[in-house]
Length: 266
Length: 279
Ligand SMILES: [Zn+2]
Figure 1: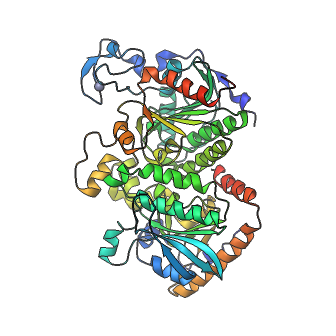
Figure 2: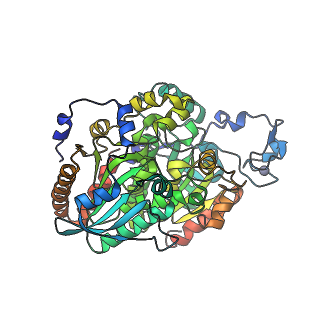
Figure 3: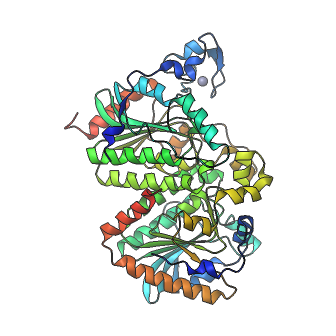
């Protein structure tokens, strides 16, 4: 089991609304995480069906000299990059690219790491035409059948089904200032109270902070953040290596069984 | 747990409890899809628009009565313990009394024209058919039971999406049910989805799109994101039938659209084609 000494290190306990605000800031960039945690990253493109969604970066890399498949949702860096990636809202072909890379990892017995930072799957016209619902549904279903260790890390926003699509894994971790929720606090307030301005109040009752989610066993581990990014990446590398080693001791059947049981508990 | 403990015969369904039976025959109604007006009586027992074939929304128990020859309910006593979100308990109580259900799905073992199936029917009159943790629990148990007894699953979807009041637990149901679907799939068993009006959000992004065969009722609205959300994102108006199943069929996400009065026959036919020995 994961030990969460990280929580005790936090000096000031931020309010849920503060965590929401921070989770949306550019604290860590996708490429920075990839280069900081892994070595020899080689990016792969496309879902082999309809295109290449740049908001989902995928490829293989080494983690302490061992090959892993890495899938990262990217919000982009500057304004043009963010626009082209819809602020990290994947299209169906982004999820299908992830599925393809997950299947590939399964074939070659490589563990899978996903890094998630998305307000949600893109609610666009083409997204619906191409089956956004089906794309997410299949990502979840296929994840339940993969015989390799899988760990997902939410490093910013973990928005709804669009995040869950890459988070049906053996373990789910969150950065200290990340959120994971059924909907944005603004959306939640506007649906339940018909008033999107009550988002701070919504954030408070939604239970979307790492602390809340750890208590509910939705996640296993909280990654303490620091301005010293290499320190954060070193911690992640070590922790991933440790947990993958433990997960690798399980037989494929046990691994799948445990993953399913993890979600059966809800 | 022994699922038989929770089975309760509902052969004597109190039909007068349903929303639709309280509508007087002489009332004038407009079809929600085509807008043509007609007397309530003209919808007939299947409650179908004579003009366009749209099936008016049914409650789960009404559909059981129309579709099945026998039905043994499972897990009728399952309901959420201590809902703690403000106002949630009241909403649940109202939904329960209106639908005679403990949650937004009715599950059980049914015969549909001699085909024995594990049947789930979501009820859009129960908090918009939203995906609560006990909705997910009942559907998961239906799949688990079907896997154990080697039965096909037939699931009628109808959902406005997530159950906001349950927060992240609602999201986790998508994964929980999917795990049970995976298990059922690996046992080589048939999972047949019937998309009904409306099926949206988290249900579309999970078990509604995981079937081996996907049927749909005419003109049912099915999508992931809400039309208004899409329109405000892309700043344009969506075409009229954008999220109707006829469009989904064109786009490759539906196998067949079946008028409501023919559903029983088509389902039993499909089940028998997959289970010849038992048929
Ligand atoms: Zn009509």
